[in-house]
Length: 413
Image (cartoon, rainbow, N blue to C red; front, side, top):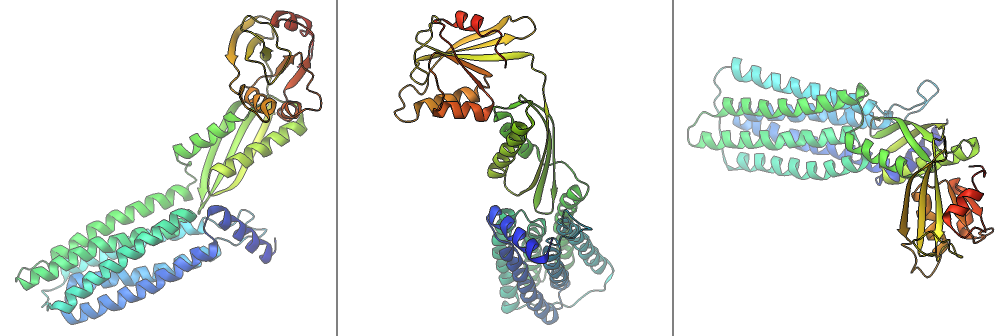
C-alpha cells in the first residue's frame, strides 16, 4: 500500500468515525500548547513562592508536555502501514497511554520524595499567585472537557488518556490552592498538599495503565458491544446459529471475528450474506476497522413453512399481501411431524404502497424456509425479496394448509 493509499484509507476511517484524523492531530497540538502555558505559569509561581506543592504541580505539567509530544507522534505512527505491519500500528496509541501512566507514577514518586526528604521551605503567598493557580485549574478543566469529548468521538486512547490526565491537574491544583491559602493563615499545609496530589495522580495513573494494558494484551471488547454485534448477526434471516464471536481493540479501532452457521448451503449466497452482515455491523457499531466472518452451512433438522390465509381455520387466501392472516408451521424433517403451528394476523394489511414487499420482509424476519401460496409472485417485488433471502416460494392450487402441505411434501427446500 502506498503512502497516498494509506492516507486516503485513514481519511475514510476518520469520516466513518465522525471526526477526521486531522482533527485528532489538532487536539494533540492543542495539548502541547496548553501544557506549555501551564508549565510556564506554574514555574513562575513556584519560583516566586518557594512552594513545594506548586513546584510539584509544575513538574507534573512538564512531564505532561513531554507526553503530549509523544501522543502526537503516536497518532502519526499509528496510521502507518507496510508489508511488515499489514494490520497497521494502531496499538502504538495504547503504548503511548501506558507510557503516560508510567510518567504519572514517576511524577508521584518525585513529589513524595521531595515532600518527605527535603528540608523546610519558606513560602511566600500573594494574590496573583492564588489567581495563577486558579487560572491553571480553569484551563485544565476546560481543555479536558473538550479533549475528552473529541477522544471518545474518535475512540482514541491517547487523547482520552491525555484528557483524563488533565483531570488530575484539577484535583492537584485544588490541593495546591488550599495549601497557599493556608499559608496566609500561617498553616503549614504545603507537604500534606503535595502528598494529596500524589493520591490523585496515582489513582489516575492506575486507570490509564489498566486500560492500556487490556488492549495491548488483546482483552475482549466490552460485553455491551459484543451483545450488540450478536443481536445484529442473529437478526439476519440467513443466520441459524452463532458458533463463536470475539472482538478486541487496537488503538482507536475495533476488530471482530465470528463463526456463523448459515441456513444456506450455496457458497455464492453465503458470501452475500456475510457481506450483508458485515455492512449491518459497520453501520450500527462505531470504530469497526475489520469484520472477519467465517460461515459454514448447517444441517437442517426442521423446516418452517408460511401460508397466506383467508381465515384462521386454514383456508388459503387468493392473494399474498392482502391475506388477513398467515399460518407458520414448523415441521421436523426426520419424520415430517408438525412441531408447532401458529396463526398470526397480517400486520401490514392496511399498508397502501408496497404491501407485498412489506409482508415478504416480515416473513423473512420470521426465518421461514418456504412460502406456499395460490398467487403467482413471479416477476413481482415479494419474489425478489424471497430470492435474496434464500426463501423458496411455491405456487399451489390447494385450498387449505393441510392440502398444500401434502402436495408440496416432496418439493425441495
